Amino acid sequence: MSDNATGPAAVERPVLANEPGDYWGSDAVALMLRELDLPYVALNPGASYRGLHDSLVNLLGNRDPQMLLCLHEEHAVAIAHGYFKATGHPMGAIVHSNVGLMHATMAIFNAWCDRAPVFVLGATGPVDAAKRRPWIDWIHTAQDQGALIRNFSKWDDQPASVPAAAESLLRAWRMMMTPPRGPVYVCLDAALQESRIGELPPLPGASRFRPPAAAAPDPNALAEAAALLHRAERPLILVGRNSREESAWRLRIELAEALGAVVLTDAKAGAGFPSRHRLHGPPAGNNPSEAACALLREADAILSLDWVDLAGAFKAACGAEPPSAKVISASLDHLVHNGWSMDYQGLPPVDISLAVEPDIAVAALLPLLKPRAPGWAGRRPTPPPQLPALGGEKIPPLMLAAALREALGNRPTCLIRSPLAWANNTWDVAHPLDALGGDGGGGIGSGPGMAIGAALGLRDSAQGGSRSGGQGAGQGAGRLPVAVLGDGDFLMGATALWTAVHYGIPLLVVVSNNNSFFNDELHQDRMARQRNRPVANRWIGQRIADPEPDLGMLAKAQGAEGFGPIRRPDELPRALRAAIDCVERGGVAVVDVRVEPGYAPVDSAATSRGG
Image 1 (spheres, rainbow, N blue to C red):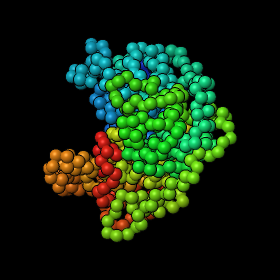
Image 2: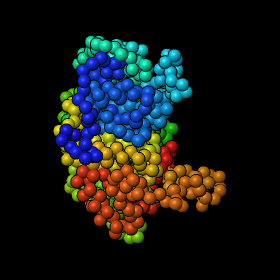
Image 3: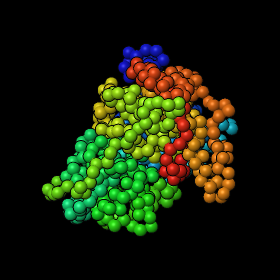
Image 4: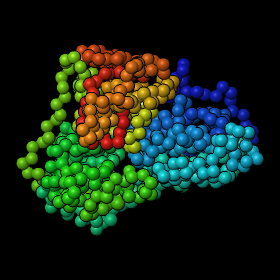
């Protein structure tokens, strides 16, 4: 943000100029964070890192990185997660001691499952017991704090000296940014931070510790994959986790067109292929449509580009039998698992493994393809989804999608999040930033924080402040950030909006509100039917009613504009237009839309919660 900004959204700058003097342990840590080019550190303050806090303010002047005050540690990590999804550039989060790390664990798990790099810093009370303050330092000191998240982070460390801390930060950054990416955690001893060190020791430059260059695929496996795809009469491409780079987007289109391959996409992974392209197939993802399952059965060659749960897609289509097609998989996901979390999903049958990132595989395959007849002779393109027209007395979830699309018009938009009720292909995409996908770990409450982080990245891009080299660098300029959240997700994270308002981060949040943890109503419905018990009781312990929370007032309490509740279709256009106007003026707006309960079958989100 400009140094000339004024008012509550202005960047917080120190009142007094920095005075030269002795250096402290935390000063070296702060300078290393600047060396790593982290633009922000989102945080909830705590005494365990009071030394680092002082260094960020009184040594660095609260810039590069700038602190973003949050009201909860989970929001801080979620903001960093969302920022990477929109920009391809990481930012940091700082959590207070063991208690702050425990608050942040769900958001760290989401980043882990989403393969998103988040640089998490934390602290502990003095490891030297003789230096601990009575009571508070003892309960905020842990023997092995990193163990709390070791099973769902790429690496953690607790350095014991200033030189060790500098190396630890460099190693964490390098490991975090090496694919498959993920969150890291560095815990700083409070005594180390607050130790006087006099002169600064020599600090290494990050340029000599960059992540390794992307590996090339095995030439023999690559040639075999290209030959298999060339021979295929019914090639199918599954676009899973992907970057937001426009160049990679164009190459995916070029590959599909060279083969005449049908392409399936997954809303969890975000925009990976243009939805209105003639080769884009029917809805897939968590609960693939029967038409998508038929394609999986009929294909004779399948190229998986890091599809999330490839084994699950095959099981949905083929049951207990393996697919008859030859399967090529481009993924590095096998490199990050240790057995604690089952986010690696089932073990899929694969004939050719390309142990590289999907974008690398696509770029390497294209030059090897020879001219050929298009696949799937005689296949008709998948018709676009038909959304309900605005009208009637109630608002079905997909009517909300239609009304929002209408209200947005031709504005460039980034759909940061969509609710469970919107099946795949509901939202048209024509650019890699048109939709960012899900939260990774199904952790309800992450939506508001991740939306703010993504909106911050889009704002920086519009202001020319996004870091170079990111997967979305410069591409988000002028995009309106929109998050459509379930009511359960919004209620758990609503206070995150304060950070967006305080720092002037424009954002539109639309709540698809069915006043229920409705997915679990469907679970109870299923249990009752299996056990021949009353289905009418499925709502008990699920409905968010008596009283219904006033979401507009919750938004206003954080300084945002609140609209609603909107209960009738004819009220929607005016409310959405007013909210969009608010965001285009730089504000934060929340629209509470009361939708009819109902969406995909329960198995489409078997362990998720929320509206």
